Image (cartoon, rainbow, N blue to C red; front, side, top):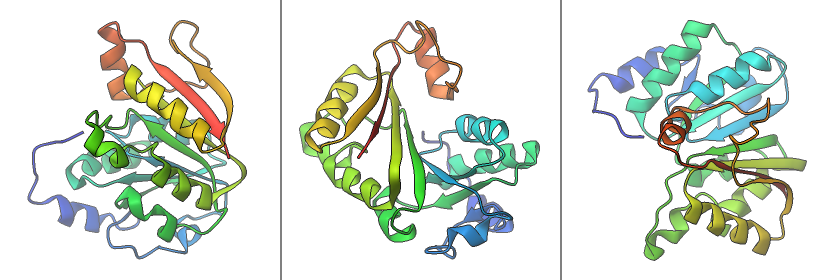
Length: 210
Protein backbone atom coordinates (compact mmCIF):
# COMPACT_ATOMS: atom_id res chain seq x y z
CA UNK A 1 0.00 0.00 0.00
CA UNK A 2 1.57 3.23 -1.18
CA UNK A 3 0.80 6.62 0.30
CA UNK A 4 1.81 10.15 -0.53
CA UNK A 5 5.34 10.87 0.66
CA UNK A 6 5.55 12.66 3.99
CA UNK A 7 8.88 14.48 4.39
CA UNK A 8 8.55 14.25 8.17
CA UNK A 9 7.90 10.49 8.22
CA UNK A 10 11.33 9.39 9.45
CA UNK A 11 11.39 12.07 12.11
CA UNK A 12 8.01 10.87 13.38
CA UNK A 13 9.08 7.22 13.40
CA UNK A 14 12.31 8.00 15.21
CA UNK A 15 10.38 10.02 17.79
CA UNK A 16 8.51 6.79 18.48
CA UNK A 17 11.57 4.57 18.70
CA UNK A 18 9.97 2.78 21.66
CA UNK A 19 7.60 1.28 19.07
CA UNK A 20 9.52 1.38 15.77
CA UNK A 21 12.98 0.05 14.93
CA UNK A 22 14.11 2.03 11.89
CA UNK A 23 17.78 1.04 11.85
CA UNK A 24 18.05 -2.58 13.02
CA UNK A 25 18.82 -1.69 16.64
CA UNK A 26 16.95 -4.75 17.90
CA UNK A 27 18.24 -7.19 15.31
CA UNK A 28 19.05 -10.43 17.07
CA UNK A 29 17.42 -9.29 20.32
CA UNK A 30 13.78 -8.62 19.53
CA UNK A 31 12.81 -9.76 23.02
CA UNK A 32 14.42 -6.62 24.44
CA UNK A 33 11.98 -4.50 22.44
CA UNK A 34 9.01 -5.68 24.52
CA UNK A 35 8.24 -5.12 28.21
CA UNK A 36 7.49 -8.82 28.73
CA UNK A 37 8.66 -12.10 27.23
CA UNK A 38 5.79 -13.70 25.30
CA UNK A 39 5.34 -15.93 22.21
CA UNK A 40 6.27 -14.05 19.03
CA UNK A 41 4.14 -13.62 15.89
CA UNK A 42 5.04 -11.45 12.88
CA UNK A 43 3.11 -9.88 10.03
CA UNK A 44 5.02 -9.25 6.81
CA UNK A 45 3.46 -6.14 5.30
CA UNK A 46 1.23 -4.29 7.74
CA UNK A 47 -1.05 -2.30 5.47
CA UNK A 48 -2.64 0.41 7.60
CA UNK A 49 -2.31 -1.71 10.73
CA UNK A 50 -5.91 -2.79 11.33
CA UNK A 51 -5.05 -6.49 11.34
CA UNK A 52 -2.06 -6.47 13.65
CA UNK A 53 -3.49 -4.01 16.15
CA UNK A 54 -6.80 -5.86 16.43
CA UNK A 55 -4.95 -9.16 16.74
CA UNK A 56 -2.75 -7.74 19.49
CA UNK A 57 -5.75 -6.34 21.36
CA UNK A 58 -7.43 -9.75 21.28
CA UNK A 59 -4.27 -11.59 22.37
CA UNK A 60 -2.35 -9.63 25.02
CA UNK A 61 -0.40 -12.79 25.87
CA UNK A 62 1.39 -12.69 22.48
CA UNK A 63 4.02 -10.23 21.18
CA UNK A 64 3.47 -9.03 17.61
CA UNK A 65 5.97 -7.55 15.17
CA UNK A 66 4.82 -5.76 12.03
CA UNK A 67 7.32 -5.57 9.17
CA UNK A 68 6.85 -2.77 6.66
CA UNK A 69 9.12 -1.08 4.13
CA UNK A 70 7.00 2.02 3.45
CA UNK A 71 7.68 4.63 6.13
CA UNK A 72 4.60 6.61 5.11
CA UNK A 73 2.30 3.64 5.68
CA UNK A 74 3.95 2.92 9.01
CA UNK A 75 2.92 6.30 10.40
CA UNK A 76 -0.71 5.22 10.53
CA UNK A 77 0.20 1.91 12.18
CA UNK A 78 2.11 3.76 14.90
CA UNK A 79 -0.90 6.03 15.45
CA UNK A 80 -3.18 3.03 15.89
CA UNK A 81 -0.81 1.42 18.38
CA UNK A 82 -0.69 4.62 20.40
CA UNK A 83 -4.46 5.09 20.23
CA UNK A 84 -5.08 1.56 21.50
CA UNK A 85 -2.25 1.80 24.08
CA UNK A 86 -0.86 -1.59 23.02
CA UNK A 87 2.37 -2.74 24.66
CA UNK A 88 2.58 -5.99 22.68
CA UNK A 89 3.11 -4.57 19.16
CA UNK A 90 6.40 -3.38 17.71
CA UNK A 91 7.27 -2.35 14.16
CA UNK A 92 10.30 -2.86 11.95
CA UNK A 93 11.16 -0.66 8.99
CA UNK A 94 12.67 -3.63 7.21
CA UNK A 95 12.87 -5.34 3.84
CA UNK A 96 11.25 -8.78 4.16
CA UNK A 97 14.30 -10.31 2.48
CA UNK A 98 16.24 -9.59 5.66
CA UNK A 99 13.99 -11.30 8.20
CA UNK A 100 16.17 -14.37 8.51
CA UNK A 101 19.07 -12.20 9.64
CA UNK A 102 16.95 -10.10 12.01
CA UNK A 103 15.31 -12.97 13.91
CA UNK A 104 16.93 -16.00 15.52
CA UNK A 105 16.38 -19.54 14.36
CA UNK A 106 13.11 -21.01 15.71
CA UNK A 107 12.19 -17.69 17.35
CA UNK A 108 8.84 -17.02 15.66
CA UNK A 109 5.66 -19.04 16.20
CA UNK A 110 3.48 -17.62 13.41
CA UNK A 111 3.91 -15.57 10.24
CA UNK A 112 1.00 -13.67 8.67
CA UNK A 113 0.97 -12.70 5.00
CA UNK A 114 -2.07 -10.57 4.19
CA UNK A 115 -2.92 -9.39 0.68
CA UNK A 116 0.68 -9.35 -0.46
CA UNK A 117 1.58 -7.79 -3.80
CA UNK A 118 0.82 -10.54 -6.38
CA UNK A 119 3.64 -9.55 -8.73
CA UNK A 120 1.76 -11.15 -11.67
CA UNK A 121 4.53 -10.99 -14.27
CA UNK A 122 6.66 -14.12 -14.51
CA UNK A 123 9.88 -12.15 -14.36
CA UNK A 124 8.87 -10.89 -10.91
CA UNK A 125 8.09 -14.34 -9.47
CA UNK A 126 10.94 -14.17 -6.95
CA UNK A 127 9.37 -11.08 -5.37
CA UNK A 128 6.25 -12.97 -4.32
CA UNK A 129 6.22 -13.56 -0.57
CA UNK A 130 5.31 -17.21 -1.12
CA UNK A 131 8.23 -17.89 -3.47
CA UNK A 132 10.61 -20.61 -2.30
CA UNK A 133 13.26 -18.00 -1.49
CA UNK A 134 10.99 -16.47 1.14
CA UNK A 135 9.73 -19.86 2.31
CA UNK A 136 13.30 -20.81 3.10
CA UNK A 137 13.66 -17.69 5.23
CA UNK A 138 10.40 -18.38 7.06
CA UNK A 139 11.48 -21.94 7.78
CA UNK A 140 14.71 -20.73 9.34
CA UNK A 141 12.97 -18.48 11.89
CA UNK A 142 9.80 -20.47 12.61
CA UNK A 143 9.69 -22.65 15.70
CA UNK A 144 8.78 -26.31 15.40
CA UNK A 145 5.09 -26.57 14.43
CA UNK A 146 5.07 -22.84 13.65
CA UNK A 147 2.48 -21.71 11.11
CA UNK A 148 2.39 -19.54 8.01
CA UNK A 149 -1.04 -17.96 7.44
CA UNK A 150 -1.65 -16.47 4.00
CA UNK A 151 -4.68 -14.51 2.82
CA UNK A 152 -5.46 -12.92 -0.55
CA UNK A 153 -8.25 -12.08 -2.97
CA UNK A 154 -6.01 -12.86 -5.95
CA UNK A 155 -6.90 -16.32 -7.25
CA UNK A 156 -3.78 -16.56 -9.41
CA UNK A 157 -1.51 -15.78 -6.47
CA UNK A 158 -3.39 -18.21 -4.25
CA UNK A 159 -3.04 -21.03 -6.77
CA UNK A 160 0.64 -20.19 -7.20
CA UNK A 161 1.11 -20.19 -3.42
CA UNK A 162 -0.58 -23.56 -2.99
CA UNK A 163 1.82 -25.02 -5.54
CA UNK A 164 4.86 -23.27 -4.11
CA UNK A 165 4.17 -24.37 -0.53
CA UNK A 166 3.34 -27.90 -1.64
CA UNK A 167 6.56 -28.17 -3.66
CA UNK A 168 8.46 -26.94 -0.62
CA UNK A 169 7.07 -29.84 1.38
CA UNK A 170 4.79 -27.83 3.64
CA UNK A 171 1.78 -29.37 5.39
CA UNK A 172 -1.59 -27.68 4.91
CA UNK A 173 -3.81 -27.28 7.97
CA UNK A 174 -6.44 -25.12 6.30
CA UNK A 175 -7.35 -24.17 2.74
CA UNK A 176 -10.40 -21.92 2.34
CA UNK A 177 -11.55 -20.92 -1.13
CA UNK A 178 -14.27 -18.53 0.08
CA UNK A 179 -13.35 -17.34 3.56
CA UNK A 180 -16.38 -15.10 4.00
CA UNK A 181 -18.92 -17.75 2.98
CA UNK A 182 -18.68 -19.17 6.50
CA UNK A 183 -16.35 -16.69 8.16
CA UNK A 184 -14.45 -18.16 11.12
CA UNK A 185 -14.27 -16.27 14.41
CA UNK A 186 -10.49 -15.96 14.17
CA UNK A 187 -10.63 -13.95 10.95
CA UNK A 188 -9.68 -10.30 11.29
CA UNK A 189 -10.44 -8.32 8.17
CA UNK A 190 -7.81 -6.00 6.75
CA UNK A 191 -8.51 -2.73 4.95
CA UNK A 192 -7.88 -4.44 1.61
CA UNK A 193 -10.10 -7.35 2.59
CA UNK A 194 -13.13 -5.17 3.23
CA UNK A 195 -12.51 -3.27 0.02
CA UNK A 196 -12.17 -6.35 -2.18
CA UNK A 197 -14.97 -8.25 -0.49
CA UNK A 198 -17.35 -5.32 -1.03
CA UNK A 199 -16.61 -5.63 -4.75
CA UNK A 200 -17.70 -9.28 -4.68
CA UNK A 201 -14.22 -10.80 -4.71
CA UNK A 202 -13.75 -14.10 -2.93
CA UNK A 203 -11.17 -14.16 -0.14
CA UNK A 204 -8.78 -17.11 0.04
CA UNK A 205 -6.87 -18.27 3.12
CA UNK A 206 -4.46 -21.04 3.98
CA UNK A 207 -2.52 -22.16 7.02
CA UNK A 208 0.53 -24.36 6.64
CA UNK A 209 3.61 -25.54 8.50
CA UNK A 210 7.02 -26.93 7.56
